[in-house]
Image (cartoon, rainbow, N blue to C red; front, side, top):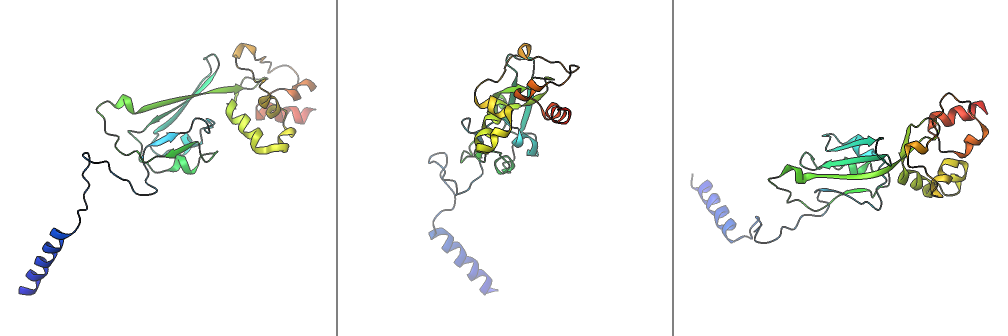
Length: 201
C-alpha cells in the first residue's frame, strides 16, 4: 500500500515544480499552434464567387443567393461563423485554392449573433440568349487567365476578358424562340444555348 502513495506523492511534487500548461489568457495573448483551424476568412482579391465552398459546407455556415432582380444581378455569399465547425472543407475545395482560408483567429465569443454574419457580393453574368445564370464575372475572367491560349477557343471568355460583359437584365436580348444565328458565336451563352448553337450550325 505504501508504494502507490509514494508514486502519487512523486507525481504531485513533479507537477508543482513543472512549467504550467495553462495559458494566462486574457491577461496575455494566446499563441495558437501551427495549422490551427480558426475563423474562415475570404480573400476578396482571389475569391471568384464560384460557390464551391458553399456546396461542401456540412453545417450550411456558408450560403449563396443569386439576386437576379438587382441592378446589376449579384450573387451573395454569406458566412455565419457562429455555426461553423471549422472543418476546413471550404479551404480544401476552393477553386482558386486561396479564395478562403482558416485563420488563427479563435476568440470569437460574442453576445450579438448578428455580428457573426459576413456577406460578400459578386456581379453575375447572364446568358445573352436565354437569361440563365452562367456564373460571376470574376469566375469567367479567372477561367480566361487560367486557360491561357486555350481560352481563344471560347468566345465567351474572350468577351469577358475584354470587359464587354453585360450587366443589366434589360440589356440582355432574351429570345428563346428565335432561331440560332451565326452571330450568336460572339455572344456570352450558357452551356445549354452553346450546345444548341454548336449542333445546329
